Image 1: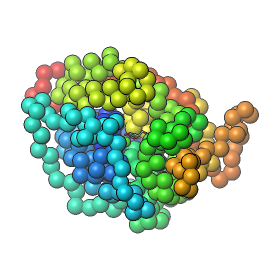
Image 2: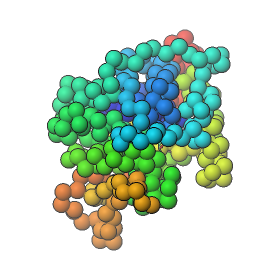
Image 3: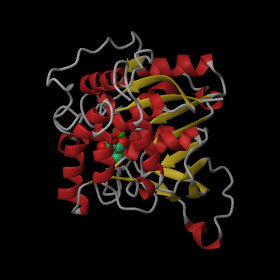
Image 4: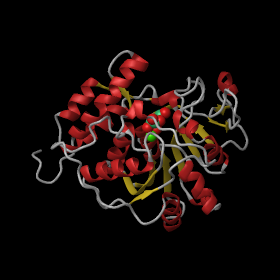
Length: 328
Ligand code: BDR
Ligand code: CA
């Protein structure tokens, strides 16, 4: 049986890869996608999400617009240097250079859509938030029974032992809305945390990009938008053209197709202070030297080591896709 999934994205270049992967994977039933501010504003995130779903032939997947800023009412700060001013590396158009028309978003909020879809399939749905956790925290407020009604939450966010990517200790999705993240990490549902510990090693290389560029329309689109993202990583992080496909790792984990090598279940607390630790996910890894003994009450499985061969599988799945009328 395919895994029922709701994505929540701030689309975003690696979000686009995650959406395409989730929409095309035969082991995933993508029930809906919510959009949230983060990499870009929520309008752009919504437009980019609709376009990617359109490109992979999934106009049936409802897309619900969500929050336009952090839950504490503070200003929204975007990551345009990483993802480009259009959130798609300046290449967020179709092959003609024209903006592709996109369908309308669903007439509900992303938080409401989460509640409705989870209530329609109790015990079956994986929530996969790969942006700031504002919508998921809002869904928890709308329906406090949600934690007992989901299969789990597989999120891209945080870092247990690796450095942060916004501050020395904070990862972007948690940094954007630490209060929302705290609400999500504190709620009593099973969480899988795909944080920077593993996603910084999930590298899409120039060989992968070229494979996508030589495939169908969806693959060519992704190769185009990834160009900017890889330049960011070359200039600011790795010194060579590679892309961290952070968000697709959380999708693969929820789908049960990730080869997980080390992932203890530990307590995780989000720092919501205004000091230098703000946005840090403080994970209790003190059991590391004795095989991670059980921590009573802990409900967060923190991915520490994975088989990064998952990137080959993500690329191959997308590169194999052909739209109607495209030659195989
Ligand atoms: C996360 O932040 C965003 O820039 C990416 O889309 C990913 O979800 C990585 O820290
Ligand atoms: Ca994201």
